[in-house]
Amino acid sequence: MPDRPKVHLAVDAVVFGYQPEIGISVLLIKRKFPPYQGGWALPGGFVNVDESLEEAVTRELEEETGIKIAYLEQLYTFGEPNRDPRQRVVSVAYFVLVRQDIYTLHAQTDAEDAKWFDINDLPNLAFDHKLIIETAIQRVRNKIIYEPIGFELLNESFTFAELQKLYETLLQRNIDRGNFQKKIKSLNILEELKEMRKPSGSGRPARLYKFIEEKYFGLKDRGDMFEVWVGKER
Amino acid sequence: MPDRPKVHLAVDAVVFGYQPEIGISVLLIKRKFPPYQGGWALPGGFVNVDESLEEAVTRELEEETGIKIAYLEQLYTFGEPNRDPRQRVVSVAYFVLVRQDIYTLHAQTDAEDAKWFDINDLPNLAFDHKLIIETAIQRVRNKIIYEPIGFELLNESFTFAELQKLYETLLQRNIDRGNFQKKIKSLNILEELKEMRKPSGSGRPARLYKFIEEKYFGLKDRGDMFEVWVGKER
DNA sequence: ACAAAAGTGTTCACAATACACCCATGC
DNA sequence: GCATGGGTGTATTGTGAACACTTTTGT
Image (cartoon, rainbow over all chains, first blue to last red):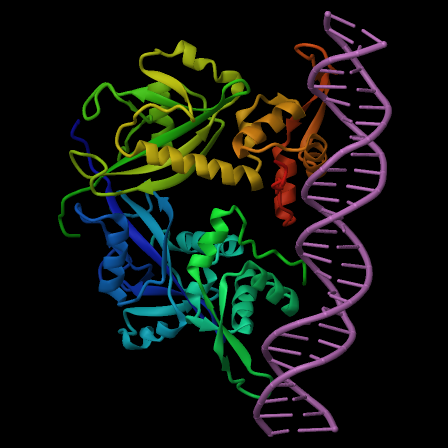
């Protein structure tokens, strides 16, 4: 193999979290070194020669933020020659979903170093990281319609109202309550729990449900689709 | 930035072609150098420091096969540490569609070096290229349902029968003739030509159509989907 | 009792499906 | 005329969408 200048390989992670009151957030870190020193950027870093790409992402996330991954998927590889001002760096971007209940980690983490940002209120970003985040948002919005990845953003048990609100946030549209419930129930991928969620004010308590991954794989194998339809409402 | 061992970056292309009598084929090259010398592999090669990933794919395809690209899309990045037996090579895979009418190029090309293979009858492949091809086939099958990429595999003008046969081949199912025609026509992305295609044997001549990209973008912007439905037939 | 939120049932419209029928050509 | 493939029309069925109604809680 001829000796030639080498291209550096990095991984970056777009980590999504969800809070009902806030919406979808992305985890960003403040850079300690140039370029873009002191600026906000995606967590990530260079790949070691002996680790897989997924291992590299997981390691970097652990090192920089201590986050727990609920779902990890390769997003896209960004390789424009000038995306890093100093040298040629190609970055394999991943997107990550984390659960609500461990979302509070950002409080434990050094707030100067790692912070959640509402996806509708992002700061200026280093490199092409704005483009990467936009790509990730698109992907999640598309994917949530035909694959049950939304559950990875909620607690293990959740109510229909919570699930619906997540979908409404992601899809940016209102969904009919009754139809949503019937549709999801017809997919038979949820387990009905005995517990209920007490309402904050008045109102009937809501039943809690749990996503059962095995049931979904059954669906998939039979060729049936998940397909949370795209309601016309609003 | 710390000095560290470098990862090599390559691109590979899964080039798809289509012939009604044969089906979907993939373009492979016979390797001239180790590893896997003399074995069949995807066209591809290392990325230069000053070129984008797409430029690298295009250049390598030009160099190795002289093919003309109708559609190019990034597929996935394969980065398992041992996918190349000698050193760490991460490969960004692309899939490419080429048109029927230039498909005959493979005859001009040195038959010892580059050849089309029916996707149902592939030889042993170097590296993890079998996995890459399988991933590409999956992607094309999914994508053809909701994006009009099928046209890139046909001539510029085509009949409904030809289009339908392509879809039946890709989706591996029979489609009702009348419903298919109505569905595609309702999308309003085709231009009706004056010419007809003379039948090979007996039968009524078929009208020729042309795909108009601008019309499709109109659809997309309005939020309407392309959505070649998945008929239940067969 | 009333408000509020959860959950179920009912109706309507439209689109996918199946399939019948007509059209244009070769032999 | 008949076979062959192209093209259009139509009845049926299934499902999304809208919305009304019932249930269970807090105040």
